[in-house]
Image (spheres, rainbow, N blue to C red):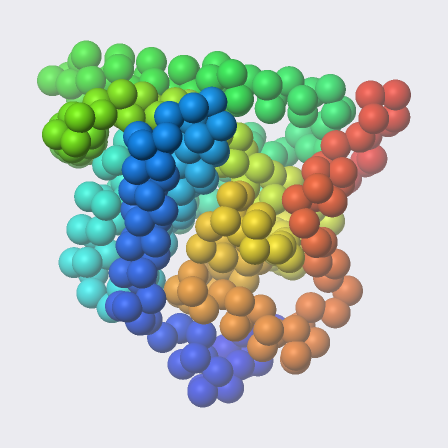
Length: 308
C-alpha cells in the first residue's frame, strides 16, 4: 500500500512541509559545534582536548555530508537556490563532496534498493561479517588508512585538473578554495595547526562514523533483496549521545527516508510516529542503539554466518 493511501492530507502536509529556519539551524549547529571545538582545542591544547576534537569534528563532518544529501534531495529549504548554495558551499566543498555526482548515484540507490543494481550494495552486502573482520575495518578507519586513500585520490585528481570534465573540475577547484579559506581563517587567529585537526578528523573518525552509518542503514537487514523498504532498510532507535556522535540530523530514520524521500530530514521522526500509530510497521523490528546493531551485523569468528 502506498503512503499516500495511508496518510491523510493533513498528515501529508505535516511531514512534507519545508521550514527554512529548521534547515538553516542544521548548518548553524554543525558549524557552531565545530567552531566551539576548535576554540577549546586552541586555548587548551592537550591530548584529551585533541582527541575529543577529532571525534567531534569527524561526527560533524558526517553531519555536513548528511546535509549534502538533504540539499541534493531539495528538501532542506523551500528554495532550490538555497538548497544548491548551502549544499555545495557550506556542506559539500568543505569535505570534498561533489553534490551533483553524489546525487546521480544516490537517486539510482533509491530506484534500485533491494536489487543487485543498487550502487551502494558493496558497502553492506557482505554483512554479517566475523568480528575480527569488523575490528580490522575499524582499525583501518581510526589509523587513517582508509582516509589516506581518500586524500591521495583527491590530490591525484587536483594534479590532473585540466584533464577532468568541467563539472568535476569546478567542484575540485571550489573545494580546494574552501579548504584554503579554512586554513586562512585558522592562520588569521594564530592557530594554523587547527587545520590538521580538520584533516585528521576527516581521515579517521569521519571514516568510521560514515561506515557505521552505512551499516546501520542497510547491512544485515531482514531481506536485502526485497523491494519492500521495510525489509531492505533499517531505522535505528538511538539515544541523544549516539545522535550527537554517530547519527546527526535524524539520519537514523532511514527507513522513513526510503519510504518517502520528499520528507525533510527534520520531519522523519514525525513520519515514523504516524506510520507506527497506523500499524504500518507491524512485524518490523526496530533495534535500539549501535551496540545492539553491531552485535547483529557481526558474529564470533568460530560461528557460521547466518544465511540471509
